[in-house]
Image (cartoon, rainbow, N blue to C red; front, side, top):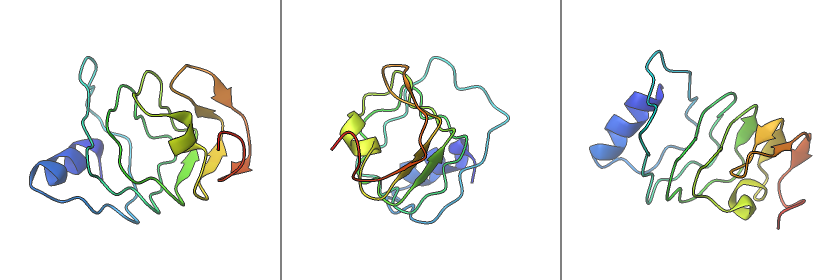
Length: 109
């Protein structure tokens, strides 16, 4: 599923995205914020995904966040670094990089 498909599904009322594999999009969403209010991203494989400038992410547990970017996202570090999430070379909202590997409930909780 591309980010565009994810947003399209969200706009159509879907809120449970457990288990999807988010793939890189050929489109540039520069300058936009993605509001993921109420979304459930548990068990998502978000390897290399860009959540830059994302806001209002709901549930995020047991996710693979290797090489994912949350730069400038409005998400607390505690939401990213908990719940069994795999953190590995993950860019945090403040631009720092958590090298990992680190699995959930470690640093940040």
